[in-house]
Image (tube, rainbow, N blue to C red; front, side, top):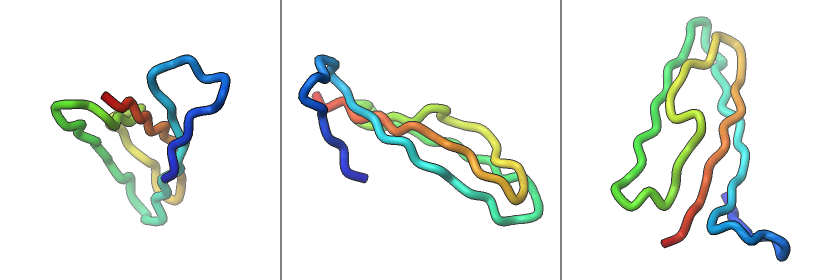
Amino acid sequence: MKFTFADDNIEMFTSEKIKITNNGNGPGKFKFMAGEKKIFSVKPEEGEVKANSNLELEVFYKPS
């Protein structure tokens, strides 16, 4: 991932969207755990991707 700050971004964070795919025949659970500094975070942090499906996540970068 390549995080960039747009010229008009006045926020203290930026984000990128990613897609996770489950090619299996059963549901796939996921859970992301952020470090203490929480420089990176993901929304949703946990959930389930149905079989033969995908889910879009948003990854946030907030430098300290």
